[in-house]
Image 1: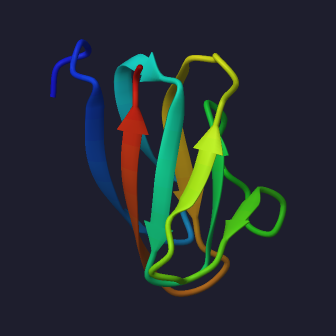
Image 2: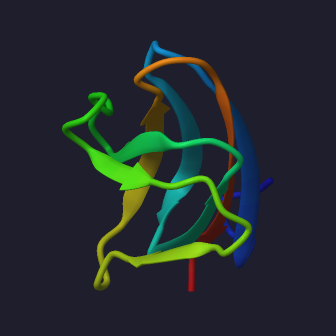
Length: 91
């Protein structure tokens, strides 16, 4: 995806090591859906049980960065694995 597209999607195969999805040009908001509990953070590596907990659900979690420009979404699990689906919004 190009940095000028209005939206961009990523899927992270989350493990107990912090992984990241990169959004060139940054995003102003995102929607997150995970098939297992995981922890996320923005522009800094996520830490299990210390970052934002995203519970396993089919309901998306909306995060608005209040005009900020986040370039990376990091995710980690405390145990096991998860798939984190991210819809990044630029505009």
